[in-house]
Structure formats: structure tokens, C-alpha cells
Length: 284
Image 1 (cartoon, one colour):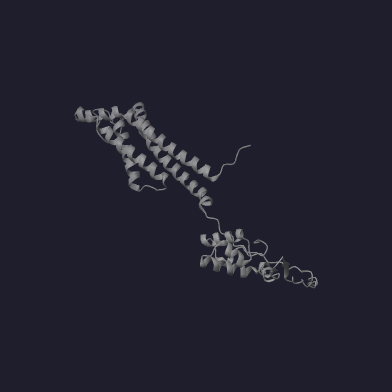
Image 2 (cartoon, one colour):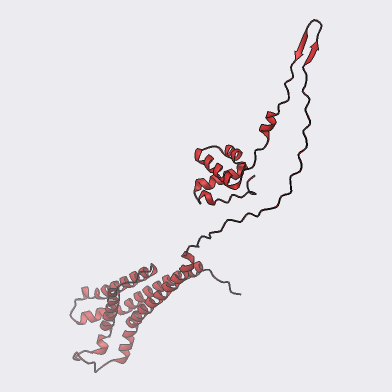
């Protein structure tokens, strides 16, 4: 079973194909210019160009054509379409090479210039294949590049599109019917310890026993649990005043770990404090 490729993998494959097309085009251009170099040089010598500089004619055209082919390929990889001058230069260089190669086949020696009447078919075909092939291949690869870029743009659509933030409504609190409180049991009176007297041989010492303190038990009792909104306000106020997590946990009747999480969200500023997920059952 064929594995389904992801958009990123398809984009990488298309970009690699585009680079390979550019390499193929440059390779064909180099080979074609090497093949036509001899004919162009002989054409220049036959028209009274010194042999010392006649060989420069073909490299001039080859460098211009190679430059436009390479630059067009690199620009298309970045999504830039060259102007019409690039196409004009590409066609002029290709047609110039073709005309200089096929001149002797169209107008042999001692033949007047005009409508070709003494065409050498074999020579025309032989000298036309490299430059014509190069011109047609350059135009075909131009359309290939455009098709590849269009496909890459389509594939990048779902990859680059940011996901819309889901605004979830706060969960509704389900009210539960609580059982009626059990009747409070009557507190038994605690006997107060009377002072003890330790009698010695000559002296009597009074041992003072402090009465049992009920205030400490009242202080150590767990304070009444605040509601969600009240706990949020207390934690936010403690965070603004720079109080410690333990102090905020004590004042908001929430656990230190829960207060630490809320502190982190407030510090990061990821969301407004009023929309923090504070529920009565999460913090302890």
C-alpha cells in the first residue's frame, strides 16, 4: 500500500525537481554550445574575421544564454517571474546561434542572399538540432517551473494557514443538592485544672497550670473556603503585590501548586485573569 505523503514532503520533492530541471537545462546548453563552437568559429573566419578573435564569438553568445538560463531558474525557485527582456535575450541568443550554424546550409558559397533556393537538407537538420533543442527545452522548462510553483503555492496553503483559536465557553457549574447538615452536638464543658500545691519539708510551691486555650484551636481551624471568583481576586491581588505563593494560597484557600499555576499564567500573560480556568474542584 502506497504511503500518503505530507504537504511538506511534496513541497520538498517539487523543489528538488525544479533544481534538477535547471541542471538539465544548463547541461544541455553547455553541450550544445560546445557542438556549435566549431561552426560559429568557421562562419566568422569565412567572413573575414581574424582567427585570433573568431573563436570568441561563440563564447559570447554561450555566456549570455547560460546566464539568462541560470538566473531564470534561480528566480523561479523563489517565486519571481522574470520580465519580457529575459525571454527576448533567451530567444535572441538561441536564434543567433542557430543562424550562424545553418548559414552555410541555407546560403552556400556564391549564392545570393534572399529566399533560400539551394538548401542543404542534411546540413540544415544537423546544425539545427542543438540550438533548436536548446530553445524549445528552455521554453518548456519555463512552463514546468510555473506549474511547479503553482502546485507549491497550493500545498503551502494548509501548511501556512494558522489555526483559528477555539474560544471555549466556560463550563457551567452543576448545582448539587446537599444533604441537610447534621445537628451540632453539645459541647461538653472542659474542667478547669486547679492549681496544684507541692508540699516540701519546709516550703510549699504552687504549680501554675495554664488553662486550656480555645483560641489556638479557633486559629488553627481551616478558614471558610472562598468561592471561585473570590479566590481569583485574592490570587490576582497577591500576585500584583508580589506576595509569596504560600501566602496567596493561605488567603485564597487554594493549594500552593494551584496558586503557582495561576501565577505562571499571570506572569506569562497568555490570557486575561478573568478567563483563567479556576473551578471550585481544581484547587485544593
